[in-house]
Length: 358
Image (cartoon, rainbow, N blue to C red; front, side, top):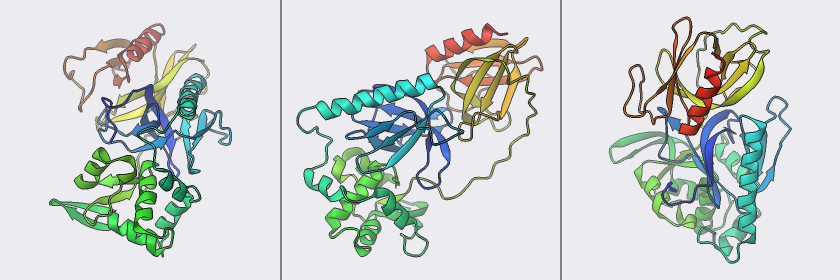
């Protein structure tokens, strides 16, 4: 597994990613390195220590802007050398173009680098995968009748549901004649893991991902557990109906970006797309997995009190393991909003812009 200490970080921040199988949109924290784009889940207002997936940049093709989504004009598409498409959405055209430029530079740098890097696969492994569509392999794995079977497994006293063993994946790939040998099956399964189609489950597979070479990350082992990256279960949610007038949404957009917001009831933290408008001054927030047309909440900035919260402890009213860069907004109706920015500079930029409208 890649860690911040082991890689040179070129850029990082929130983007919204479309799922491969269940094609919903989820906010993820992305980290761009010289040869790959890593993405993480945010839990409890902090980045999850285990990456959710990676996009290998060698021979990657970037389409920016990608305009096939009429209601999502800020999407760019990354297609890997294995033909896997990844759709990423930024919060503004400027941010989208900056991400695309940095990713393109990394891809171009990999193409001009002489010799093979330490992270390249052997030529044999590359040739085995060149003519295989990973998306089609995944579709076959999901097939109700002939796909791989999900079951419960126990590892070191812990029970994991809806998963399968590494050896079961290898058996299935060989049985379906997608590969000829178990060695080829491990190579193909490693590619599925690298592209984020599969994820590690339990300690053994996680440790293998952390320590093994790139072509040896997947284990042909009955005790190493894996599962699909995208959940097949759709979570139900109850949303409060918000009445918004056209006047609220008619102001000029001064600032927009991804921030973390603490919920009022459950006190959990969620990524929200915040949009600050003037004349009239309103701050609205959207669910980035949906669209930026219908806010899930918002309030007038008139008469609001805005304060920066220090990073030397957890302030009163804040729940969870927060990582600093917090600020607080108290509305005229005495509603308290706790918000967290990804960086200190972003927090200060937001505070300055909000205060200019209060």
